[in-house]
Amino acid sequence: MLFSLLFLVQALVTSAAYLPALVAVHLLYWLGQGAMLWLIAAGHTASLRDPGITGVMMAWAVIFLSAALYLCYDCRELILLGYLMVLPYGIFRLTWRGFLGVALLAMAGYTSVMLVLHHQNKMQWAAGHEAILGVAFLISLLSYSLLGREVGILRDAYRHKNRQLRQAMVRIEELAVRDELTGLYNRRYLLGSLERRQALANREGLPFVLAFVDIDHFKQINDQHGHKVGDQVLEELAVLLSGSVREVDLVARYGGEEFVLLLNGLTLVTAEPALNRLRMAVMEKRFSQSALPLTVSVGVSQYHPGESSDALINRADRLLYEAKRSGRNRVITESLERVREMVD
Image 1 (cartoon, rainbow, N blue to C red):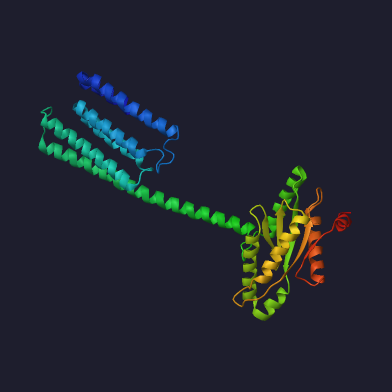
Image 2 (image 1 turned 120 degrees about the vertical axis):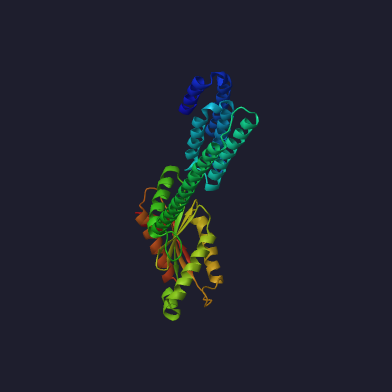
């Protein structure tokens, strides 16, 4: 805007005869700029790689300067400065190729106008002077292009570092809530999620159950086949458990060979058949490279509004050990009488 005003003032002083045409060109230029700014503000360019359409706006400015040069060639020095003022606008936004393209467009526009003016005998050339001026202008444009390339390299490096930092932050967040071996949620995340489920159940009366799943005779697997095989068993069981529940449910590794399932919207009546199907799926599968058979014991408790998370977990844990004492490979749920006794 300031450059436009300065240019109009010089044109008025130097060649007032061209002032109406220059005013028209300026109005056309700013109408075009306004239209592009409206497209950006209205979000019509949001899907483009460069939502700010920097290259288009710079090309439009170069076209305006070329038209102004043709109309008021007596102000050539100021217009040349205008060409150079356009380029820095794209240093931090355009790619190096885009920046170079705008620079070459500026050189082509300037050269074309000068050739047309010479052909129309509107100005007389001093060949040596024009050659030096043209070369100096080209060197200035190429210098800006090289600067744009260096800035582009730094920008890409900065973006790459930012992506690495974001990936590292995501990884750190995952490590904070995920079990490193199985990839399941860990106990810390489980307890936080349990508190949220309790709050929802207390507020809206939505039921949920908590199931402790424990591998039977897991110590024997480690002793007889080694901890590497034991880790494979845990990983494969984690995959099976995750694939056996819904998206609204949660599977977590509680510790060792114990896993916890939070089954949202289920009661003991609806959860028991589902957990027995899960138990049968474990029996039918063979785990690790050693093709080991596996069974699990399951203790299931249902949340009752107002009780603590510790009470819910302790009830499920006691039911799990009851399943162990009863011969393993079974699902034990609490009866209504047992629930009343435990809650009391």
